[in-house]
Structures are given as structure tokens and as C-alpha cells.
Length: 253
View 1: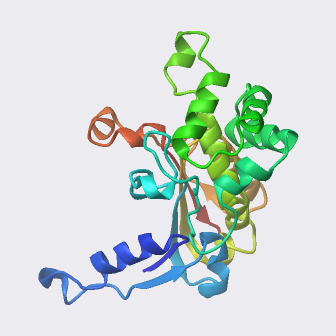
View 2 (view 1 turned 60 degrees about the vertical axis):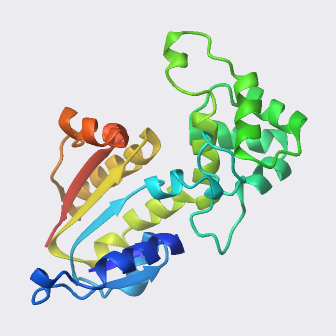
View 3 (view 1 turned 90 degrees about the vertical axis):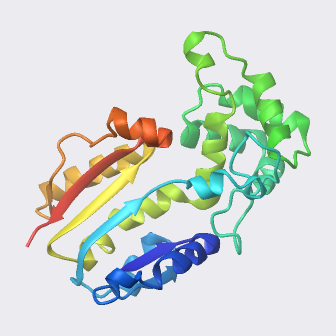
């Protein structure tokens, strides 16, 4: 098993849990390799036509969301970081305080699908400097108060925080690279399966279109006509699975 993650903390946690097999599995435990990189770089680390399957679990993890110091969540006070790879790249604080109003509005609209993006961007620029998640959430909430019952079901800052996280971590770029003919399809054996779990419509649309185009070009056989979603029982045990959508395809011979 070869695991990829941008987050050094996630790799360390995985290493602690998986590198030493439990006594009852000592004889058949797989060889495990952990790589500090995006899954978009899979073809640089895995030989062509060698993988039986590839599973990509997109987005942010519970471990990241629940650690206020990482800055992913507006539900706790923390620094505006949001980087999965804490060793490199722009932080959310740099984006919030350095982008001009139009750049901010465009990013919030494109990556957050937030129709009030211009109003929110204007409020952010006027409130600068902003250094914490709580302050940013406060500014957004004041600028984008819910107007109806549907809007009240979701926190006003949700889509903007999603947009900043996607931008900072280049999440959609990485997904597109994974789905290109130079990445996932290159490392999969004929008959190997590509499974992707997405958590919002932007990701799911990219996966759906890539699988459709791959099937048209004879690259894949799509295994899921519609995305697989969590059962009520699973949602009861894991509320964050509510938005998960799983799509799968098989590499053609």
C-alpha cells in the first residue's frame, strides 16, 4: 500500500497506526510506503500499469478541522493558515490580506459558489488586517446575513472558508492532474479501479466529466452511473459523510 498526503501530521499519524502490524496479522501485513506529496504526483512514485486500485479521498480531514491551530474551521479561534502542507505555500491569512477586492470576490465565487462574493470581498478588504478564523467569520457573517430559512441552515462563512481552503491548497488543480492521462490511468493495471470520494459539487463535477470523457475515449469503464452516497445509518454514525459522493471507474485493457 502506498499512501500520499500533503499533510506531514497526517502521514505521522498513519505511520504510527499502520507501520507495526497487529499480532494476528503479522504474517500477511502489506508493505506500506508513505509519501509526502499530493496524489496528483502519483505517476512520479508508482510504476506504470502496476497499481490494482487507486482511492482518492478529497478535501479536508476531521483531524484538520478539529485542530483550531490549523485554521480550517470558523467554529474555533485560530490562525488563518488552512495549508494542508504546513511547510510551503500561501496561507489563508496572506490571501485574505493581500489579494485585491476583485481577486478575492472571484475566488470566493469560483471555489465557494458564493453568490454574495462581491459583498463579502468588500467587507474583508474594509476590515483588514484580519489574522484569525473567528475575526474572518465575524466579518463574513455581518456582510452576508441569511435572508431566508434555506440560508439559515448553513453558516454564512461556510462557502468562503471552503473557497479559501481550495485556493490555498490548489485542490481542484490537483484533482484535474490526478484524472489526466498522465496520472491515474497511467499507473493503473488493466482492470484496475479508480475510486474517488468528493465532498462538494465542484469536485464531483470534475470527476463525473473526467469519467465520462475517459469512457468515451476507451480509457475507462464507468462503474457508478450515479454517485454512491452514505446511508442514513452511516450518517448517524458519521455526520460528515452526508455530503460524500463516491464514483468509480475501471481501467480498460
